[in-house]
Structures are given as structure tokens and as C-alpha cells.
Length: 590
Image (tube, rainbow, N blue to C red; front, top):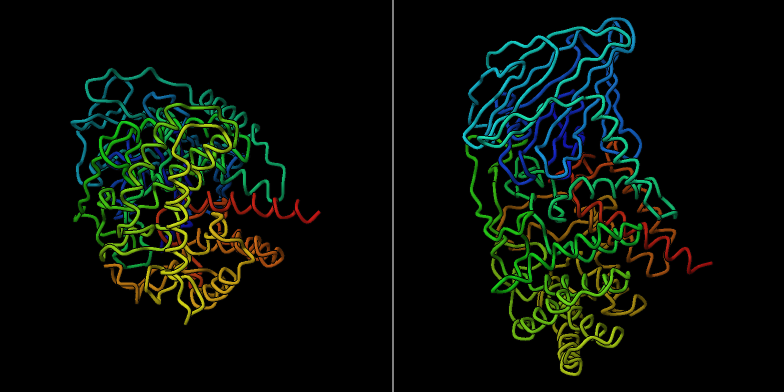
């Protein structure tokens, strides 16, 4: 059976994540952190690269769902002999060793079930040493071990295999726990108790959602995804749970997204605060300030979940990749790029934190003033832009617009909140940037703002100009740009970022429609007063989600399939913020 990205569900304990295929196989998990080496890498290879299958031995038909607004997954299997349920979850760890719990529960008749656990450390490259410690099977490696506990009889070989049966009312649990090197094995946990506590955790967390507008269920599912991609110990939110899922099948646009991007900062703050999650918004701001304020040089565009700066990129040549999409990349060389828009993202996040009553932060404003000081001397430079191109620096329109945002929000911090800063000097810089963008980024022949100065290439990021407040949505140039972007970048109603065949971005042609860009189109239409069109597109985008309400980075409208890394925080952030924007325009129309 051919695998698709939308076939997967995510489990999370708030320090790492696991992806579960609809056939019952956990095909991806990194321990002990989101950005650690994978111990299950079948997602990017073959079963021998590591996976954990739990499913009926006979032919079966499965249906799956999350329990309420949680990341507790249950799959019900029906066979000719009976039915059973597999409950998969990761107990929120609170910084302790991560565990995956799988409980097989008989529903009717008698079902023969097989568990096949193949552990391969180092992204599928290293087989563990196997040993027994009492009733615990230990798969060891130099940096730690995974320990399996189950009452089911288990035999060894290339993996750990258990074959057993369940009748109605019977339960057979499995618990797989990461143990750091030289640490003692943790005490055996109660799987049923852990399930109850995990459901209580998610029930309490989801009950705090204050958003009561349209599409509440969809917004809440996306908020749960964001929480699942959050490192509880640091407050950082990773961009995705995976690396190297292709932006086009068989292509080379395969990147590692298991890190924290500053670009997501303002969007994340607005999404969390707008839904009532002020504690999480504050934790994200604290991560942002803590990570960037101590930098002796300019802020990076991304960091590790604990603020690591060095994210060297290398290739796992032994992995064939998802649908033979090579190379499989670990790390991300874009961490060393110059992307001037991140200055604006940081200042906008600091400003929105104040607006959402997160309280004053001397350190946050100290960071803001330092960032603005750096940007005063850099905004005229070329950079690699929001799309992290590898084809050379340009004067990207979005980067310059975000430089304008940085000074605009800095001025507002002084004027609205009485904070100290050279507002007069910043105002002059802001005005100079605005004039330059309107002069250099506008293509009169196309009737549109373009991707970069002097270019005739369109880019969906220019749709953000009215949302940023750079120009009003009823400005003739904005309306003309919106029309041109829809005309040239639309594929079956979904938007490309830009035309990859003519971009000169340093990569081969070919990628799907970028889902956040399509949500930006929703926002632009809503701001332009075209709320019915915006709502129709938003509802089409909701249909792109898989059966569990999950989104990847991109979408192939022709093949009707998800593409790119999964689950993608940027896509879910854009969904939440579009729902908030639609709710705002609905309120204004009343």
C-alpha cells in the first residue's frame, strides 16, 4: 500500500512526537527531543529503518479518531473474528523520560494481534544491543536506551515480536520508555492510570480555550497541534515534527523543520493570546527573549528548542527518503542565512505581547531596542528572504516591508506604552523604507508589487502588506496586486508561494501549493470586504486537512494530497489567524 502524508496522526508528550500510520505502525519518533535522532525512521525509509506495528494479524478494516480535543489516538479494527481497539498516546512528561503507551482492548469476538517493534537508533542506521532486566526488554545504544514493558509474551530477532489474542473486555498494554545513558530504569508505570492522566491533561488544557467564534472546533484542533509541537521545558515551538518530507514527490526540496523559527513569533502570539492561552503566549515570548537576548551578534532566523545556534546540515545517505525523495537532510543550513524580516517578526511579537496584556517586560523591550539598533544599519542590505532561497541574496519586498514593521511597532511601543526610545529617528527610517518599497517593488507593467526590487516575479508574501498595515486594503495598488497574485499563482484555487520554475531560488523546479499562502489569501479577501469569497476559500482549505484535522506544509491540488513536513505549525497558525480574522470582519459587519 502506497503511503501518503495524510495517513499519519501525531502523538506528543510536549518534548518529542511520534507519527502513527493508519495501518497501526509508528513510523517516526525522535528521542528524547523533537530534534534528536530518530529511533523509528520508516517514514523516510523502510521497515528495517525502525517502526512499531500494532495491528490485527488478519485482514482488518480500521477507523481512527482523537479522543475529544486531545492527542490520544484510538483506532478501532474490525476483522471476521471480532473487533478490537488500539489506544495510542504519550503521557505529558513534565521533563521526564518520554514514553509511548499502546493499549490493545478487545471489543467483541476474539482478535489475534501482532506487535512488531523494530528499533534503529541514529535515523535508522544503528541496531541496538538487546538485554533483559527483570521483566523489561532493554534496547541499548551509547546515548541511552528504550525499554519495553508488556505482559504479552515477546520474542527477539530482528525486532521484538508479540503475538496474542484479545477477547471482549480484555486489555493488553505496551509501554516504551526512553532512558538516558547510565540512568536507572524508571519504575513501571500503570498504563491505564497514565491514559486517565493524559486525557485529564488535554481535557483541562482544551477547556481553557476562550474562542467562541465560527469554526471553534477547527481552531481548537489546530491549537492542540501547536501545544503538541511545544517543548514544555523551554516554551519553544518547533515548526514541524519531521524532516525531509518532500515539497514535491521525488524532488530535492526536503528540509529539516524540527526547530524554532523567529518568523512564527508574532503569528504564534496572536493565535495563542487570541484564543485565551496567555500562559503559553508568555512562555513563547520568554523563549524568544531568552534565546535571542543573549546573542553577541544578530538574531538568527531559527534555533534549537533549547536555544542552540549551531544547526549544521548534513545528509543521511542511507535513507531512501519518502517516495524516493532525496536527499534526506538533518539540520538546516538556513540557520546561517541573513533574513531581515525576522527583525520585524521579533519587534511585532514584542508589541503584540503588550497589546494582549502579557505584562511589561524590561528584557523584551531591551531586546527590541537592540534589534532596532541593528536593523538601522542593515535594512538596506540584500538578504535570502522569507523563503530561505539558496540562489543568492536579493532585495526582497517582504523583507523590506517587515523592516518597516519593525520601526513602526517600535514607534508604537513608545507612543502607546510610554517606553523609552528614539521614536523621531525611527520615524524617519520608517518613512524612508516605505517610500523605497513603494518605488522599487512596484511593477507598473504588471500592476503589482513583486517578489523583489526590479523583478517581474510575483510572490504570495506581498498579500501580507495590508495585514501588516503597510498600505490600506482599499489602496488601488493592493487591490491590483491581489488580482494579479490570484491570476498568476493560483492552482485550482490554492496559491503557490511563487513560480519555482522561474525563481532562481537555487533549487530544481517543483513544489505544491503553500497552505499558509492560501490562508493569507483568505485574510486579504476578508480585509478587502469580500467576506463571502474568503469564507468559501477557508472552508475549501478545511477540506484539505486529513481525517483527523491535521495539515502539512503544502498541498497538491491536482493529486489531492498533502506535501511537505507534517504536522506544520505555520499552516495551523495560519488557519487559526484566518478564523480570527473572519470573526473580526463578521463583527465589523454587524
